[in-house]
Image 1 (cartoon, rainbow, N blue to C red):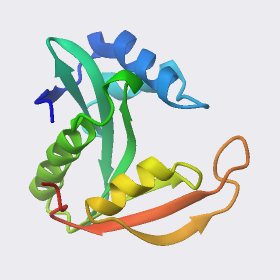
Image 2: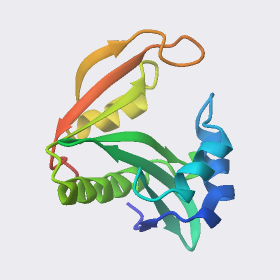
Image 3: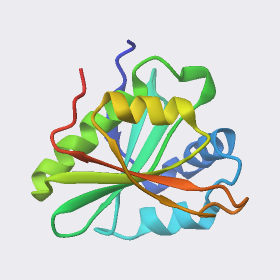
Length: 152
């Protein structure tokens, strides 16, 4: 495991976040969505993972009354399997606790077995399937976990 600095994202992080987004996903979020989220306070929380001052991963968390919702989690391909995603999820676990949430949920591509395995290791279980959720027609699996997550 490589220890990353976890911090809140700021509008000046857009270029690095968008580069990671494009490197990680076949249908990346539009840049303006990232810009809008980071310019508005309170809607969602963005965390970044830094190694030697360089952003190598980020995630986005939202919530409702009793549940947090992981909207995105991305680690640059060259920094995967170093514990970066776990460290980001630990940060989101703490934020969820501060919010008083008891569960976290997320969607993951049905074909993304490495992400599915990671989420299962930290306590997420299958809830349902959303057919044709992604722009290419791929299904999303809806996963949920009780908090706190099982991060080692």
